[in-house]
Every structure is written in structure tokens, then in C-alpha cells.
Image 1 (cartoon, rainbow, N blue to C red):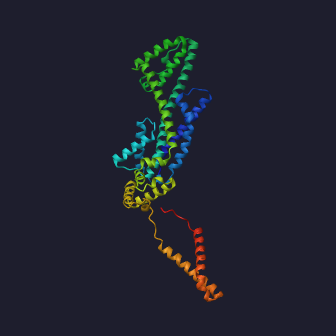
Image 2: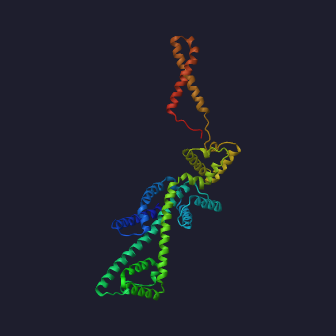
Image 3: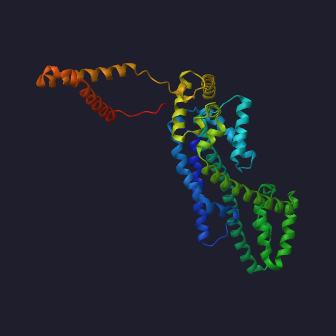
Length: 383
């Protein structure tokens, strides 16, 4: 089954890359692309790096176990947070918001869902960057269109020392959604020297006829440009910020199952190495599924039992297997081998030597057996 989130991400990456190539083409020819576009040129390497990591992480087997419906729900939750914060990510604030959601809705994220959130944050930021890149691309196209128009205007001026702006520019109410277009026209009219004043008057009259204000459109264009600069800075800073954080931090901050393990009275789990914690989580996930409980519910239950027994929670996750049968077999082998070797040597030296040989031969057999076991078996931790 195709994943709509990944498909959309791949498409956005392709569009951002194409736009980046367009910007490189322009900058190499010393064309001004604007401050927002310069951010994309200077920081595109971040997108390229994250593309590789995200595609690798998205292939993890555990993530495939999350249903499509659940993925879309988590996507909307994370997107809503980032949108409300203007895509200026604060990890601690995001953790707080996600915890509040879990408590309010009693909808506790699993370990694999938190791994998904770690990927989603970067995907959403890159998707938003592509929306912005498309808007910036439209403005570049408008700038190129105006450049072409004013080349014709300049030719007209050279021939007639006069021009009518309405001949070249279609002024209508649709321009309210294209303030940048009017701003660029206004900017270029200033370069016309003595004809500038008459051109401004004509432009303003045409705008008024269409219920538009030159002053308001230019103000909107400036505000949009300022917002674009802030947004693109937020996006790149946020991508770099989440990339620096380990997934372990999100487990500790968001997973209520993890909080339960950390808060055991024995205080052992929190002091363990990360690779040991991975073993605990893997075991907890399997056992929770076996008992048909969510991870938080199951973790809370075994921690409560461990606390009552004043034990480490590991005793409930990794219950020791009985070794009585193995011990009996081990002793039986040593006794039988000892008797056989003692009998064989006693037959050669005399049967009276057998009782004397039993102890030293048993020591040799035991040592020999121990060395064999060390080489063919792998030692295990207590938990």
C-alpha cells in the first residue's frame, strides 16, 4: 500500500530541488533573487541531508505497523502545533503540547508512534518550505514578466518618447492577490525619469477604477516579504534543531510508558545505557501486545508490581528461566565421564586406584566441561 505522506514528501522534495536549481542558475548570472531565496540557496544542503535520513527512517519495519488512519491523525496533531507556532519549533513546548493532548484525550502515543513523530516534524517543515518555494517562484516569474514588459516600454519610449501603461499592463481586481506584482511595477516606474510622475498618476487612476489602492498594495507586499523572511528562518532553524535532538529525548519526554519505567522505585532503569533501554522497550511492546494492552497501561501495571515487591521492573519483563534440568544434566555428565575415565585408568593401574582417582579426575573433567561451555554458549545479562 502506498503511503500518501511519503508520496507527498517525495513530490515536495523534487519541487524544492528544481527550484533550487533555478535559483543557482540565476545567482550564477548575478541576478538578484531576494533574501528569502538566498536562504534556500545557502541552506539547501540541510534539505538534501534530511531527505536521505527521512527516507531511511520511514522504511523501518515498526513504522509500517502504524495504520494509515493513525498516521494521518498524528500528522494533523503535529501539523497543528507547528502551524500555531509559525513553524518556529520549541522541542520542550512541543513535548508539553503533546503530553497535554495525551492526558486530555487519553490517547497515549506508543514508542513506534513517537518515532514517527520524530520523522513527521521534519517532513512537515520541508512540506511547508515547498509551499513557500512555490510562492517565491511565482514572484520570480512575475518579476521576469515585468522585466519583459519594461523592455518593451523602454523601446516604446525610445521611439515615441511616450507610452501608456494600460497598453502593457492589465489592471484588474485580481491584482489584490498579487501585491508583489504591483510593487515591482512601481519600482520599475521610478527608473523612467521624467515620465515617472505621469506614469504613477496613470497607474493610480487605473487601480482606483478597480477599487485598489497603490499604497495599500505596496504595504501588503512589504509585510508579505517580512513574513516570508521570518517564516523561512523559522523553518530552517527548526529543521536543524530537531535534527540535533536524539529520538531518546522524545521517548523520555512524550512516552508515558517510558515515564512509568523511569519512575520505578528501584531507580535502575533511568541509569541504564541506551542500548539496554532498547531491549526493555522491545520486550515491553511485545508483552503489552500479548496481553492486549497499550504500552502505558502495561508499563504502569508491571512497575506497580515491581514497586510492591521492592524489585527492579526488569524482573517482570525478563523472568528468569528454570535451570534445574540443565544443572542436573551438567552434573550427570561430569559424574558419568569421571567414573568412566577413572575406571579406564584404574583398569590399567589397578582397581584399588579408582577411589583415589575420582577427585582429581572430576576436577579435570569439570574444568574441561567449563571451557567447552564458555566457547559454545553466549553469556546473558540478568535481564
